[in-house]
Amino acid sequence: EVQLQASGGGLVQPGGSLRLSCHASGFEFDEFVIGWFRQVPGKERHWVSCIEKADGRTLYSEDIEGRFTVSAVFSENTVYLRMNNLKPEDTGVYYCAAVDGDTTCNMALYYGMRSWGKGTQVTVSS
Image (cartoon, helix red, strand yellow):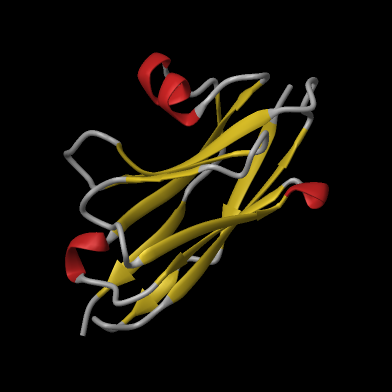
């Protein structure tokens, strides 16, 4: 069973930065993808970014591209989300999620992530 734990959230002023971490364990296969999602109360969970272990390929949603960077230390099964120039609309609970096996971010986002961790709250406010 894949388990994930996101951390690193907090309160930051507009224009500030945060780095979120997601530590994963329990993978059965060598390959996997991990995605980051954001949820605001009363709204659907929205994907933010994704990374593939197989080739390090990354994917970003349009509203954050250029401000956020996803990276990983795959040997430690840890994925990071560096968030720069944060805006109030970036506020929400951030979750990491995974699909274990040989797949791609596009496939995982289309068919749905299989394993979810508990989220970490990010609040962007002055």
